[in-house]
Length: 621
Image 1: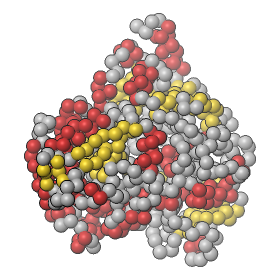
Image 2 (image 1 turned 60 degrees about the vertical axis):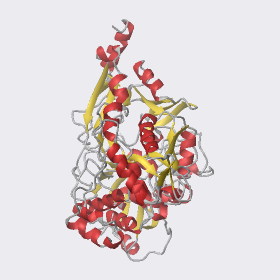
Image 3 (image 1 turned 180 degrees about the vertical axis):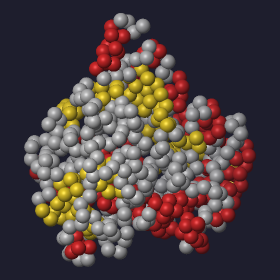
Image 4 (image 1 turned 45 degrees about the horizontal axis):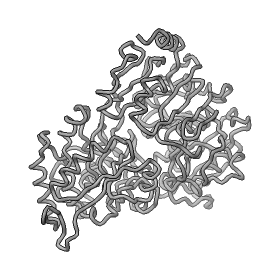
């Protein structure tokens, strides 16, 4: 799962029957279960009930200073929970969630707004008991009614993807002023649901009443989190101030975190312009995603003087999948052989060497860099799952290990293009006068839609050149971020560069990525348009896995079916964070295993800030 603060703004909900009569689990839930301070997806909690802080946070970290971060594009709303508008960077800082995600465990949540969590062994329901000291920034208490209102509002008026995550919830209600109960469907097992319910960003019912939740918002919203919105310049910057009397500062999951007095986001429409702004000190840190910039753009005096740090930090995060994504709603991409053939035109080995300084590893799984990805041939529990669908799956899935096409890196992938042409001929296409077309004369042509300044045009254009050698007419179109968002939301594209982020513990989000029910819902993350009963069934196996072994087997099976569907042309990934930042920070001795720790566990070191200011005054020599 993504960290709670990031994920809280993207909690998903599916097909709820709220207010249904209390039967079975609902009636049982009226009785309490032993309260706990946290809940794990599988296995035991790392932190005991008397823990005082996360290991990767420094409880004695000094408070103060300003952190300035980079943001791309623009913003026109402070409501991140609806489709309309572009929400402001960092807006999740103002909200608290019921629980807080531990970044050194695969998927464990500890109480934040919730003082304790009740849950029976079969996880048929969950109740959260709110802390009596939890308050909104206006001093009013956070109540169970706020949680119920938040949940119902997200379902009824939030972005469409909210209909995917909580499909197994049948009822939510406040059983007292500080206890909120969620009851689940009796016919399913969903171990993840109590944890992702804990990640809801709770909203203040009293502040939102009388406001149109579905509309863009430019009034500073009320929250209960460690920061409040302090000011903004439209499309240029947004500033948050630390709440001095923040109610949760001594909650164990928050101690030693969110140390800066001010967090500001500066907006840039052009990534290269932003690079020069970083070097000039306009913001503090860049998580660099371009191997070219990483290799060539940061030889400047501040780095040589030690005022700026450039480092690669290994991580253990699941890489997920990035690639050229087919929109299978388009007739030209509905043939699996066509999609497979087009994949042979991407020359990763040349691209990595010539354009990306050999900085990347080729992706060959939707769950790369983890035990969750499929390898070799299916065996054991994974094979048993797939056997149920053997008659509807490609035969090669059982007899061949999936591999991505490889080249010699020369830039002339002749053999791969021969293989592609054979696949295309088998699918009924032929080349006439240099154009690949069907018997009726319809050419194979499509557009690759990119967002301006994404840096992906240099990756796409050699791909297009290889497609042209096959007689395929592919073009590249760059559009601004707002237009790109609208077109992707409405599935108005042929191909995009897309990514499917994954976690150490996949679950309900897989419904939104891959299932048939989301394929035609604008705003869903099933941008591919996957409609496959086997995929639908395997997603449910992932969600209902009773233990880690079953989860791994189900995820590998899902991965394998997606790979053999050739829904994307896989790109590449890095197994390190590439960081360049002004040397003004202190950091805990222990880094989180599954995260970066910035900006929540870092702090501003006044002595280092003074060194940077002195260096600037003395001519930057």
